[in-house]
Length: 282
Ligand SMILES: NC(=O)c1ccc[n+]([C@@H]2O[C@H](COP(=O)([O-])OP(=O)(O)OC[C@H]3O[C@@H](n4cnc5c(N)ncnc54)[C@H](OP(=O)(O)O)[C@@H]3O)[C@@H](O)[C@H]2O)c1
Image (cartoon, rainbow, N blue to C red; front, side, top):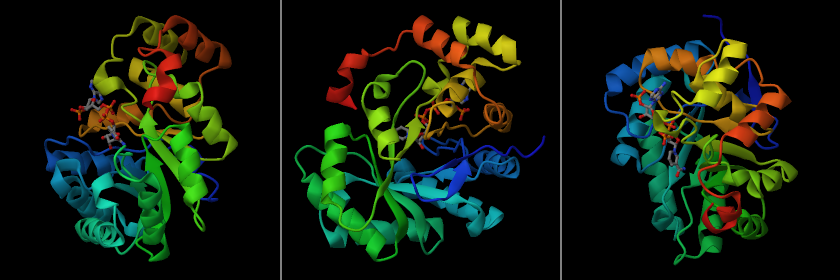
């Protein structure tokens, strides 16, 4: 298979990564996953998502093994720190150091605040996140699961660094972000990393996606992923540990759905959550 060259800028950093990344949540068989990830890398996937929380650090250790195989300079690594570990500089530093140790690298490319915990001060956590960039634990910082008002608060709290990404749930079945968050991120040049982009396999068998896919010679999964890739600044990060599914993911890059087919998806596939609920939940 040819190495696909389909890249997108991360925020306004001037750095480009593949328009699809790979997630690492819930891996069952790390040896099998390693083979699948190397295959993905060889075919043009260069950005990978993990978190201190996944497998209690085991997912970061797995990515560490993977990075050794493919070379640190060839991949863009995102990890996430949980809110309760961001409440003080000391805790944030300890988390970052532990993540780096598990990943076997000296600096991560992007650290995200995993989510916002209502009873903890978001400003404090964002300041500590910025501190991690100041200290060189990460090159860039970002957030996850934040809505527009939380993002505004976060951006106003920062003094030196930009938020380059917000990682949120986004798929053809969950398009809540399209109402406010996506336009806000586009206006501010912030990447959306779309998680659960194939609804854990539920898009397989969708009649509308299948019909559209037939026109392009693509599967339902590939159409669902390309719907996201076709949106400005959106990078889906699906997960699989199976090589044949990696091959399917790769086939979602290097082409775009027509505007008519994007419109068709919006008209024919109802978003599972009302687009009006968005601000409350995202
Ligand atoms: N920031 C956050 O709060 C947050 C939350 C959730 C997820 N994430 C990130 O986003 C990544 C992806 O999200 P996700 O894992 O929730 O959902 P997803 O990518 O939509 O689905 C992954 C699941 O679908 C299965 N799958 C993959 N291809 C398939 C196919 N062709 N047919 C049927 N099933 C298929 C996978 O199993 P196999 O491995 O067996 O193929 C896996 O169990 C995560 O790994 C994580 O890195 C972030």
